Length: 416
Ligand code: UD1
Image (cartoon, rainbow, N blue to C red; front, side, top):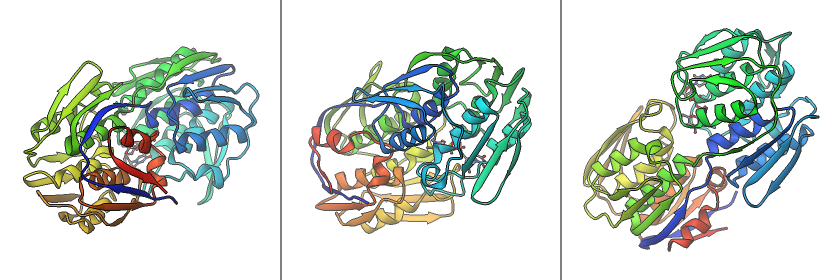
């Protein structure tokens, strides 16, 4: 794995353009397989998770045209429904969307369990509960899963937890089922209406995406369309936090501010000098940052994916900041790394506290997952001296051109 080497304490200035959302793109690409015709996706981020999905599509004999203007054209009329082995499936967690898409199209899928960042147990029982409710039989062993159905028939499915992945996967399986499926206690994250919109453009009949009840009337055929990936709210939030920590004057373009309302409110509470425009933010030097408290929740609550990033800013805040993580059970590993840099941290189960302000000093740290890595970038930009972040490939899974974007605003970052 590669390393990021960052010299800290530069004042950042200029503009950053936010890319298309990773968590939307990784579902839209498998969703395109449900079509019998050409699907064009635009604003697709150039990240390694998308490379991994492209590899799976090519293995399945889809025809792909990926151009460097962030466009992917997918032709899946003649794909082969082959087992997706571990070497492909384990490259990313979101490979599980091939389950819903292939089940929806062919009523049969065989694949290895997905991989991805290690931030907790990450079960997929709710996805499987949904597939079973639609009429699928599930067999397999600890490594591989076979999902098979004579036919899929719409039904009511209640999710015990508003899981993003389960909501999308059930939508994918249900679009070509017979009759009406109703997903209750569905997740409401902005990526979900973005996927439903693609499917509706292809000819599906989905209502209520973005609310906690989604109704899907099955259709027989899905056709051609063009669709744009929505802006990445987690990338936007990450750069907003970077701005709060280190900017003299930073403009963040191509965002949907209401998608990060919960973060923007916290940044205001922390005394960050931030102006919110229609589709942009401007952050100016913020000197007296105050401590705050966050609890991660499903959307529109505070996103778990920004918790580790905000933790680094908390080291600059005066007083005791607290974080309560309610979504994942293993999401504080970044704090031990922050501790190596000089942060005053106490972790107790799902709660952590950070006492600031403390001076961070550059050292060698490990990115344990994608967002932990993003948090360490914030810490390295704040720190005195040079920080080496090992396992930087985790970060490149989800942040397009991060080295270039940071260098363009005056940071000193090298990928090695
Ligand atoms: C998605 C995001 C991830 C984000 C998470 C929560 C993608 C590719 N990833 O992950 O970045 O951190 O939402 O916002 O979009 N759970 C079960 N059973 C299941 C499914 C989930 O118990 O079948 C639990 C998980 O263990 C976790 C919680 O539900 O505790 C949230 O999971 P979920 O919303 O499904 O997250 P992902 O879709 O995997």
